[in-house]
Length: 528
Image 1: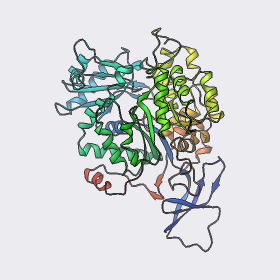
Image 2: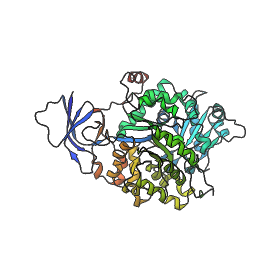
Image 3: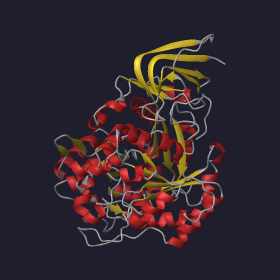
Image 4: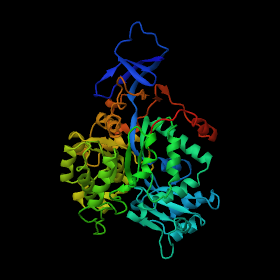
């Protein structure tokens, strides 16, 4: 056993805001000692100075879509960008220009996936039609995703690849029609990814995690509409060799599809989005509320009836799976809670997003051991740039956005990015917590930090293994020049680690070459 002592740092355990120590001992990738004074009569293989920096446990992003994040980082592009002056492009002419310029650089039959289209920020307040996309992309297969990921616009050739009849079709998909083709769309996109592109995307993803201080992600992958879903099998195989830890949630109702990956998992996990979505999203008018959308006067239904949800939840819980389920609107949240309440395992299950709960659901969440995996940065952006909530939702629904109420109630509240729906940046999500949509619902920087460390560690069933700097836990930590817990809340968005350590070793930035990726596959595989 080779022991390493890290010294000359202010180590924040993360257990309580004021808890610090001066020396950290690491043995075989695990923390084996935390001390206020250097241990006497102990010989270390290495003694490493951290130059007086502050040291914190690494962050956990419990809700990302890994394959899409890799694809967007390597071969896709964002249609709209949020700037201090607003959203650009802000009209279809600007969208056309951006698509034409990107498409002109691609091969004639290249598959193009574009992200981050913001309907409410575009003057025309609509998606491009398939005919417009055909023209702008030069006949290439193209899909554009809205910023919430629950609505899309497709070119004629992309509709054809999905075996959807383009006759009379405007190219727009939303709600269940959108959700039920995501497996096949993923297959189409992943089949077009070459080794160099894949290597670059994987490197970019891991580099971004290290830059932000993230050591583990919860990856929601797999779609039931893909018969063989080879893309999920591929990303699982690759992720077992990442430096960044990956914990998969397989989005299948048919548990036989998830069972083929069980041998790679320490804890069985199922659900997330995909087949496990109870509803859609606000921006696509597919979130399930009991009251109508303000702009349309319509309501959207839950995707499944209660009896069906009860059966799928019961089967997964009985077979030992932790369950995660996407639910945004009050009706959808109530539906999944009602099903989870009938389980017998006592396992910590998860509600993804959980934005617009009503009082009944809030009382249930206070009583039960469920994690809520939120993305508060989205509400921060919406209030300042998107205005989706105020345009689409009645005020009584907007008033249901909470963070502090959930945190103070002792609910396992977690921050996450939903990447690539939003950037992987955890500090934006923490800004959304400390400067929340409703100011009275804001929490402190330390409380926001717990929502990215201790709480998500529990939410991925690894509370005994990570989330704090304590003996017996993973030696994943980052250094910083500033005291995170002493900064002004609004400054948290600019906070960045100086160096990130995985298993007690500084992360080495990836180059993104094919040779590097192939070499990484020789490393010992880890549980996912």
